[in-house]
Image (cartoon, rainbow, N blue to C red):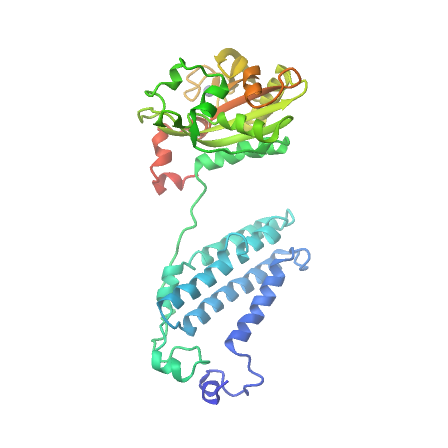
Length: 411
Ligand SMILES: [Zn+2]
């Protein structure tokens, strides 16, 4: 390190040997923090709220110090600025390996019950602080080093002519957003079935007429195949009108036994209004095994409804018809608001329609390559959007897709 540079540091007085360079000091913080976030609070010996406060204060200081160092260090050019800003952002907020995700995973999640509120609060504060590490704005604060000076002393990674950042200015805040209500409901349903041992399967949204109709026992003459109802890309390709084609794909891929749920986006040529959207979301469940009966269907859906809407929920099945199940039924659940007495949400009926279900048609099993003489199965499908509307008392389905944060922030 050049003599002159050491002398120019504000902490000049100690010798170059004793004084760690900014890079080395940062490395020290890096090591410490990264070691700490790999352990749980218990492993760190932190068992009371005051220690939690001290630990998080340390982390916040580290974040501010790193940010300050980044700005003080300057950049060689515009690209370097972005690269440096992005590196800091990723270090803290990277989805997989960001420090915050480790802190959430190792400190917050396993925190003891009585410690959880203080860890939660401190974690939220930290998140708000970290939200200000927005790449473009951060980059804009990093001064670009004067080229000729940089050439003279390449090791001295400090701005020479850039103005000092004004630390009294308010920071930049980038809100982290919230989970979309459709995603929230989808995850709630997924959690319940994952707990029962089902796995999640997905499939293409652009689908062949074979998978979308033929393999599901929907005949050529069926009205849903009409181009008034379905978006055709060509005579044999459609935007899938339901998630059911994934049933066939999964049967062909995995065979039996099979326990899956299928969330996904579907498309129909509906004119947009308060209850219709040409794009919507479905969730489908499928269980195939030896000796699967209608009792399994009833039992599973009853359990599902109670987990989704509360222990007091009752379920009702009424006969229906679908080409891909036989027999078929409509599932309704007792209204979770009035518990069956009748209210606006259930249109005074006491019941809320949840979806369709039935025993998988033998022709559908055959199309999936499964022997209907040995195996049987049940299937269930529901509209996620419709259910989210009922659950959150939303009168207009269009609100889900207008990206209006004033609406979305409420969830
Ligand atoms: Zn009701």
